[in-house]
Image (cartoon, rainbow, N blue to C red; front, side, top):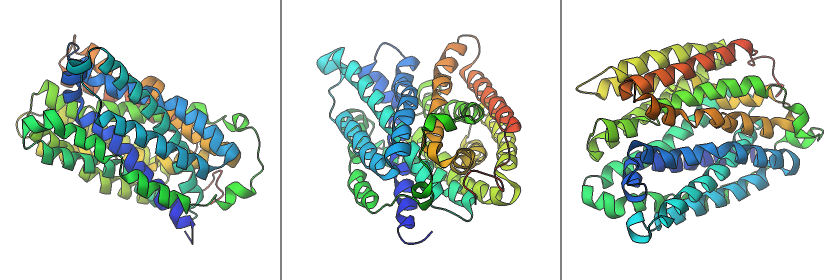
Length: 400
């Protein structure tokens, strides 16, 4: 990376940290939001804010991906960061159900829908512009980029753990601080993104209708459905599982979520680096096996959960580290943002219901068993999707 291409990567990485900070905020505070906004729905009430967020990401991924391919990556990135920062800021000051009644959960649900649209759109351009700006060691860059999701989660987990030391404060005001803090990075993001440039490969490519280049999307979306089912039945379900099902106090499940995400950062970087040698496909398929094994170990564990959560945090993040590079390498330049955005976010059409399926399956099996079965189904889908697709390390649409 040279000159302003560095801003392209850093700006995209920062956006991914902020995207995951927002998602981490709604996941880690799910048990609190359930009590304040959906008080009669139990576990389903804790899941709904997450579901509303992820289910509308495909719409944002497609709309803003199309605009990114036709109008430019940089313009879209500026617009999306302003959008999701505004939404998370409003959440911080939103009155509860006990203050304004049914209007409160309706507004919160709408805010999560808007958030999903803007975050979905942000992925389309951030993944695309970062991978188009990297010519060597793209796997390593992919692992670093994808690990930004966990950096955002770690930041929100640390903040939650600190605020949860006083349970009554967390419940009354602390959770609002978590959302309010998410507004401030927008200022830095706008500054960095103003320095970004359109990648050379994008400027030189012939512009065609992006829809014409989406042939690989059926295979890539299958892979991503599998990845995201695993994530939403695993790391994104863990705070709900620990807090709502196991009834651990907030400071305990906040700490466990923190170390789970923290160890996932080097896991993704290592996985991305290895993929530069053995291939994206091989690394991810191996990672899927490790992820399923460590998930089984966690969901069958009792007592001290520190070691199982650490093993799980490392294993479950191995397969998806190749995502930015793999998706970017599968699509031609004129349709790359649309393909990347819809593949990554379109998977939520199915995967977004993962935690609802867990909730329903829990009527038949223990919640831990239900979560593992859903996670396992995701691993099988991702493995199948990778198996029918090509290896992109040496032959791909980025012409590395």
